[in-house]
Every structure is written in structure tokens, then in C-alpha cells.
Length: 215
Image (cartoon, rainbow, N blue to C red):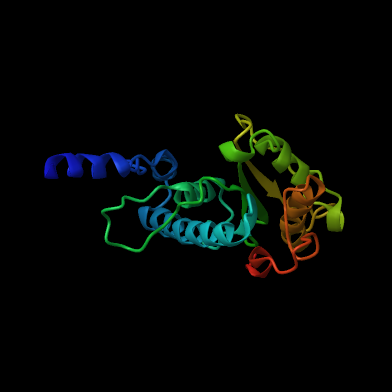
């Protein structure tokens, strides 16, 4: 009977398939980025992922836009951050929980004033695939007129669920500091137009924890 009870317990707890492969990390290292820089941005993504998961649990948000500090305006490093955000942690790992935000669609942004460029990565989760397209969302940010726009064209190979772009400063049309200000607002505006972004101004229920989060 004890054996049967143990088997029942095992059946009641599904085995969590945690992330074992990190192709974006491997690709960044293969492209010549230093392992310590790759590890740093992956860790930042993992920490931010847990914060986003917490905000989603409190407020029901399904989409999110934020900046990543350690990606240096480089798309390959930014993709590593997204991989860290979406990773499912090994439950036996004693370290702090990281990642876990794979159910939330995201645009993440990294800028480099020195290079005069802004990198963005869009990821669309299975849960919002019928309402949102990564390539269209990211191109919508590039094409936005908000604040004078951002510019740029989504990289080849973009899919409905993953897209990347690097927007370069054009002194005649797009100034870096304005681009930096515009891209986050444009990414959120795209969601608002489609009723996919909830904050205090659009919530009928008053307080929304997501609105107090640092976007």
C-alpha cells in the first residue's frame, strides 16, 4: 500500500522539463563575444524573467517591454538575455530561481550610444500567438511616428514568434537619444492599440501591480 501511495505521489507531480540547451548563448560565443559578457547578460535576463513572472502572477499581464543593461546594443547578446528570461530552471538547482517568463510575449531593448545603435528582440509566446506577431510588432516599432520614430528594418529570418533588429542612428533623420526614448514607448503603444497592454489608465479595476513595475 505504501508503494502504491508513493506511485500515486509521483503521478501527481508532473516532471518539470527544464531548459538544458541554450543555442543563443552558444551562437554568441561562436560569434566572438566573451564568455563572461554572455554569462552576465544571460544572468540579467534570468533575473528579469522572474520579476516579469511575478508581475504577471499579480496582474495577469501577457505582454511586456523592457530594457536590458548588459547587451551593449548587440542583437546576439540581447537574444541571450531573452533566452535567459524564458529558460525553465532546474528544480534541483539550489541557486535563486531565474527565467520562467516564457508564457509572456516581450520586446527587449538594448542601446549603445558609442555605436549609435539600438538592438531589439521580439518574442511572442504560444499563449498570445493568435493576437500578436513578433515580426509585425517589431517592424511596427521601427515604423512608429512616435517622438520622431526609430527607423530600421527587421532582420531576415524573422518568424511569427521571434524577430530581431538593429536600428542605426541617422544624423539627418534619427538621433540616437530620441530613438532611445521612442522605442520603448512605441513597443507599448503597439500593444495598447490591440488591448494587449493593461495599466492604470486602461484598467477598470483601479490598481494594477504591472503599472508600478519598472518598464
